[in-house]
Amino acid sequence: MTATPARDSDHRACAERLLKQPWPAIDAATEPAQLSAELAAHLAYYQLPAPSEQLRFSSAALTTEATERVVWYRWQPPLAKRRALVVHGYMDHCGLYHHLIKELLARDCEVLCFDLPGHGLSSGPRASIDDFNHYQLALDALLAAVAQWPALPLVGLGQSTGGAILLQHLVDHPVPGAPWQSLNLFAPLLEPAHWPVQRWLLALLGPLLATIPRGFKPNTSNPDFNHFLAHRDPLQTRVIPLAWLRAMQRWIVAFKQRSGPAGVRIIQGDCDHTVARRRNLANFARQFPALQVAMVRGAGHQLVNESPRLRAEAFAQIKF
Figure 1 (cartoon, rainbow, N blue to C red):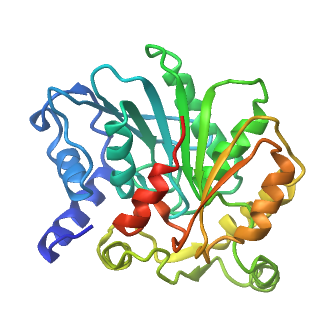
Figure 2: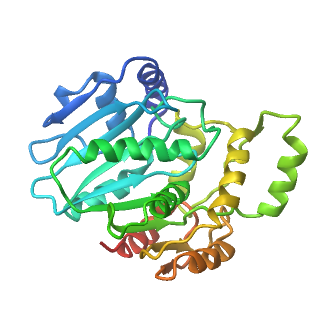
């Protein structure tokens, strides 16, 4: 993912306008000229697919009781065989998932994704949340909207925290096949790496600080993506709110008590130093007896933006 300095500066201003103004909703656009100038620029900057006669594009915003604006995007190819709902990870947004979106379109999927509360172009305190259930409220609101669309088999794909959100939805709705035909989760979150130390630091610093500085340690072997994330993405936050860490801590304790019979497929890099991959996989195997795990040798945490070879290996493991 690359961008020129001039485009970086231009898109920072564009992103700020998109965050402040009412969302420029569009339904089934078939050419870029039908989009607002800011939305067209946003798609181009993040290399997201542009609308065409062969790819209708829609976008709108919905409201939940916890979030004023949750922005979603939908790409509709002709004769789609299934609908793929993509849930991004913590600190991410839909703009970073262009590789996965294009892969799913090539596999005859209609693709739907949304910016989580506090992320991307959705509203809310940046990268913060008081309760992980607010993510479920956003997902439920989107699924309620999807239920009004022409029916297609629904598959879920989640990266990191996005995987955790889909797992929570799965155990909260245990009826087989409701609504997921399959779930493919890239390095799903349970415990982050070094969680015992992080938990101790949270207890120590929590009463004193509201945020801590965010370090941009490489989480892929893809230097272009690592550089873009740290230096050229205007939607990145530079701090980690401790409120989010406390919400995660409560979620971890509660989720470890849950289980589900449904099949789940996890795609995991063996060089992932963001989550406690070994401990998490052991926990997931206990919670989900039908669990399938595909390891990608040499891959880091952000599988959807790994180097081309490793990304292709990860995508080849997606099963519908």
